[in-house]
Image 1 (cartoon, one colour):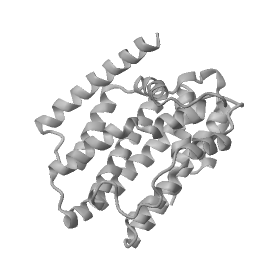
Image 2: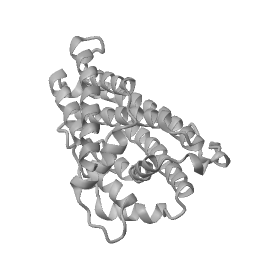
Image 3: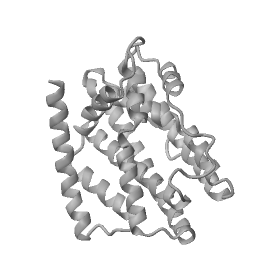
Image 4: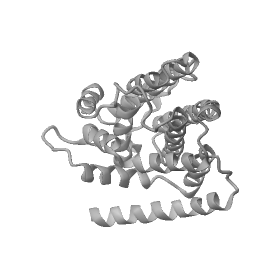
Length: 272
């Protein structure tokens, strides 16, 4: 069941004068990643091949992810009439593929896979919340609020199933924490960099991972505020079984904001 559709968006309120060029670039990239939700569903259904209830939930989840991509792509085409969403998506999937032949989780256990999925939803719910607050263009603001709400529900979906599998796989807090940290580290892997390249680079430009990782990160990190990062840390540690008020969680919340702020400053100096 979708909680909203493209028909619920006030497209007629689109205001080209309020489009931020940097936000437009990251929205283009996000549209490609979200629209690829079907491949993620294939991977998860392979890993959980004998869990009919979870597979049904994953299929519904993927439909919402694909809708996110379609909605963001439509907005990007309004903001940039030269942007061809479907063509750019083909460019993305021609160069980036998920391990669709996998039959076991790359995390080692099904519980670990669900911890990792919680971290992905933690990142996206925080990101779209931050993007909504940064966006002055009214349609993008509405879209990001809707998507952020979906992503928070998705976190709860994977968290519920994670707890079910923790009883079977019996992975402790340390192993869960290692999965959390590992998945956070993967946030700068080829997927986002290649999506940014596929969405924004000219037809003859070669892909340079470092260049496009930095270009994407600089534009994304600047929309985050302390409260977004504190929420992200809290949700991540919840997936690891660490309570928000434990000293380590509170310390890392403050540290994460300082790290991101320093990273933004470094990237801006490098570009200058």
